[in-house]
Every structure is written in C-alpha cells, then in structure tokens.
Image (cartoon, rainbow, N blue to C red):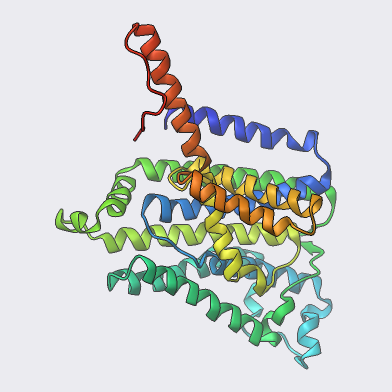
Length: 358
C-alpha cells in the first residue's frame, strides 16, 4: 500500500471515528447510511474501475441483503411472529420461505449468500458466453426490472410497494435507541475498514494485477493461458457480497427497505458515486459515496424546489471536467506540484504547467 494511501485512509477513518463528538444524532445516522453506500461503492470500484465491467444492477444485491436482514427484524417486530402485511392479505401462518429467517444467524448468512449466489449464476452464464460491455450493462439493468417487479407483485411475501418497515427490536436490543444507533455507526466504520483493507490487498495481489490486465485487454490474458471468466465471476461475487453487507447494515440503521430502493435509479446512482470519487481508486469510491450523498442532502434541505437540477448539474460537471473523479484531479495536481518542485531544486528548465500527466 502506498504511503499516500495509508495517510489518506488514516485521516478519513480518524475523522469518522471522532464525528459523533461534534455532530448531532440525526447527522450521525445520515453519515452511517452514507458509509453503507461507501461499502457498495468499494465493490463497484473493484468490478468497474479495476476490471472494466460496468454493472448497473447492484441495487438488486443491496436489496437482497437488506431484505434478508429485514425479514428477521420484521418477524421480531410482529406480534405472533406474522408480519402485518401478511395478515392483511389473509395469511394466517408464517410462509415456509420466511420461517428460517427467524434465526438471526441464518438471516446474516443469507445477507451475503443470496447476493453471491445470484451474482455467480448471472456472472457465469454471461462471462462464459463472453458477453461484455454495454450488453452486460443491459443485462444487469434487466435484472433490476425483474426483481423490482417480482417484489412488488408478491405483496403477501415481500410487503409489495411498501416493503418491510416498522422495525423496533432486533438481536435483543432496541434499534432506535441513541446508544444502539451509535454502536451500529461504529460497527459500520469497522466493517467498512475491513472491506477497504480486503480490497486494497486484493488489488495489489497477483489476482488484482490480472483484473487490471482483463480491463486493458481480455484477449491478451486469455492468450497467456489464464481464464478471464473465472476472475470476472469471482470479482462480481465479491462486489455482490459487499452490496449485500451494505444492505443489511442499511436496514439496521434506517429501519426499512422497499423495492424502490433497489430499482434502476438507485443502481445508476451507485455508479455515479464511484465516478465522482474516481473509479480507479478505492479511496475515491469511499469519498465519492460520502460526498455525493452529503451534497444530495444539502441541496434537498437548502433548495427543495431545485435540488434535483443542482445534483444533476454536479454529476454532469464531474463527468465532463473530471473523467477520473476527484481523486484523479488531486493526483494530477500533486504530480504537477511535485514536478515543479523537482525542477526548481534542480535549477533546470522552466516547468510547463499544461503538461499532460499519464
């Protein structure tokens, strides 16, 4: 890990750890939600930035992880163990599909297991048939449409359009208690830190080098004797697991999940977070998710009538002016400053500030 990366992450996590000392409980709950989004962004950075696979369907993996934990929480919050929306639909006994989710260990396992299983199935058949580029992106979007339609249409099992709501207790504690919310906030920080460390280790390993090689030229990797399908399916599953974990943490802190939160628009927004921060950087993905959602909150609170236009303009500006994201701009400025300082020390020729840095 580069020294600059260590310093950047150290400062970031120190700020996050000290944030509850200066921020209100409401702002901390918002920040905790943004950190869940940062976990998703790290996974998208791995598959898009490092491997070159643009997935526009990560909202599905997020939603599946959220529903897995939400089903357990809904059972805990329901008198008699039968959710209210099932009673409204005339269901008198907990469906067989729901019964295992009464166990919190099973729910946590499925939070990761279901997204990974789906990613493996989709990834294997698409990558094995060498489907890539815009065609894979369209397939991932179609996946979103299928699951959102399925979850809305099976109201007696999923709660329909309203989804799963009104969670009060879980894992033996009151989830809405301020102390519990702060504990969940720090748990989210620790999980994000663990995922960042795993991702940094992965990108610097031999497998990570192969992922970059696949991005730059998949056929070359195949001619060298490696099977790109194996690595693409693997990183797709890892990315889906991260999204599922984020969904589970999101439900614990927000207290609801609905099909709308796993739809097309949220899935595209997830990609935009990474684009804003810098898709070739794990640090950029984290910063992009936090800053973009912070800007969204600020604009919606300060300019409620036009915040969508302001946020859209911000996205367009970043994509057109900063194709490598905020981290790319910072790296370019630092490189120019370093070269300028080096040339001054050497007493050499004048430095051209317009020099393009690769």
